Amino acid sequence: MLMETPDLEPKGVSALPQGAGKALFGASLVELQDLMVGLGLPKYRAAQMFEALYRQRSGSLEEITTLPLAVRERLAAEGYVVGLPEIVQTAKSVDGTERYLIRMADGETVETVWMPEGDGGERGDGSEAAAEEELEDRGDSDPTLRLRREDGAPGRDEAPGVLAPGARKRWQDVGVLERSGYRRATICISSQVGCAVNCQFCLTAKLGIKRNLRAGEIAGQVAAVLTRQAVKVGLDRINLVFMGMGEPFLNYDEFMRSVHLLAKGMAIPESRMTVSTSGIEPAIRRFAQETVRPKLALSLNASNDVVREQVMPITRKWNIQALLDAVATIPMGKREYVTFEYVLLGGVNDQPVHAREVLALLRGMRAKVNLIVWNPGPGIDYSQPEPGDVAVFQKMLIDGGMPTYIRRPRGRDIYAACGQLKRTVDMPELVTIGG
Image 1 (cartoon, rainbow, N blue to C red):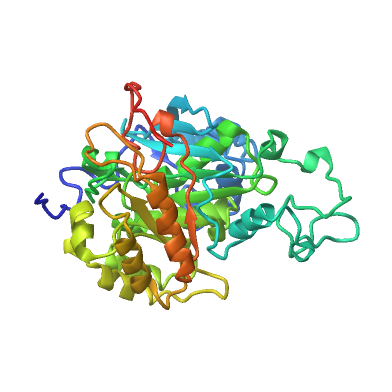
Image 2: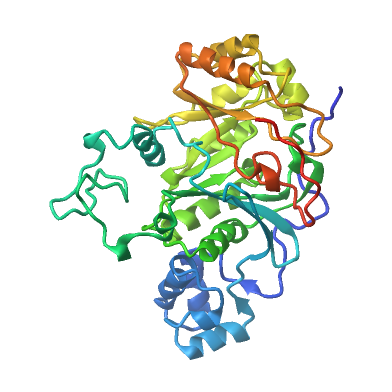
């Protein structure tokens, strides 16, 4: 089937929409300082505002009680609002996953997903989040990863919440996730309203592209979800994945601004963030130069250009080798690995010949592979792979020296899984999922 190369630029819409007020959420500390000085207010008020917006996640000017009433009234008179996105619809899966329809100031909506325990996507990437999961996989049996101070508090080399035998936490040191029986959670974030990339197996592609999200709208999804879940960053382990609606690297500047807001403002380290790209070669090279950057996951999804063009038409613009060359420019940390995501489509890219080609492509790279069993959706003419084919594919990669993991599907029954986000307003009849 012949498919057009996608048009990657939003048309006829503003990249920075105008809401009912001037949003403060999304501003950097420097921008807040300039605002305060411009209004004739003390510069130090900016730090108070920054803390209230991002650490305290205040939802309105009235809630920012660290600012004097006169300052809040002055800001309101000038038309400023906090401007957080609003959760307007929630769907909850049988597995605990929650999918949110989130509305921006101009009425546009995106979807964001909350996954208690995550989906295992971090395993093997060399990060702290990966070490936590791998430690738990070993049954907490490795004492070298459970160092603690003599008073029983977590040591410098210990993941928060992982205590050696006999150590006990105080109740006030236990986060809401752990109290609920979870060890961590992952939030899947959208970066655009719709998507331009046109991956043939993805429901989001059917929306097309409407506009980019601003940094505050991207980070604001995280704030809205954390507030809904009553999470305290620092007590609770939170991982972020930029894998929702849209291609982050086609909204590069606002995506990276959101990373800085999340890291510096909300205290979620970039080592706990992963950005997924369909393969925007110039942006990957630009990403390689960043001093603060999340982990990278490249959506490979095929073992050669012929198959990849069929499922991802963007391959005509940047082929697999161009993407691998760009990835090779990223300076890797000692324990860092690039993740290659591979959606398995029954009879399309899931056979032994494809596994051998993947091994040949990635040979010599500091890489790991996440296999994703395709998540069905209405109007998409693919099928899930046979369980036996999935097992053989994974075994061939592992036997060939490539760390390979199968990502756990989360929220399939509410269209919250990978490739299923489509701004659902009314729940359609659910598809039958095998396996």
